[in-house]
Amino acid sequence: MLIIEQFQNENLAKMQTKQNYTDIMNYFTKMIKFYISKGILVDGDAELMAAQLCLPISVWINLCDRDPNREGEVMALISRHINQFFKIYKVQ
Image 1 (cartoon, rainbow, N blue to C red):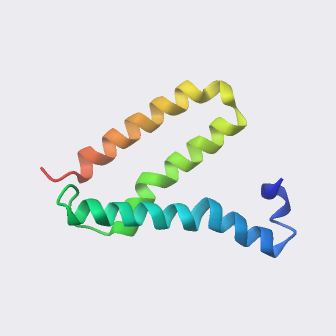
Image 2: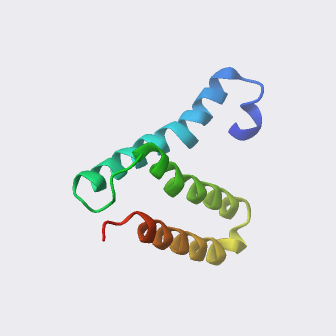
């Protein structure tokens, strides 16, 4: 309902952005900065790294919400995605 109504109500649009983008990005950016500070991930643009990690996962979760039969496929994609992310950014 929120997805449809956000286009007609500015307050709902702001809430949708906060819930599905801003809060997620803030959480993941803090997490990436923590991993960088602990020497787990290479030093880089934490905000961009967070986006690369979390935004595809958010899209896949939304896909699964719309089509629950794809849960197995989505979980496999998320697992591959996380493994690839750490192959790229993990300190060697």
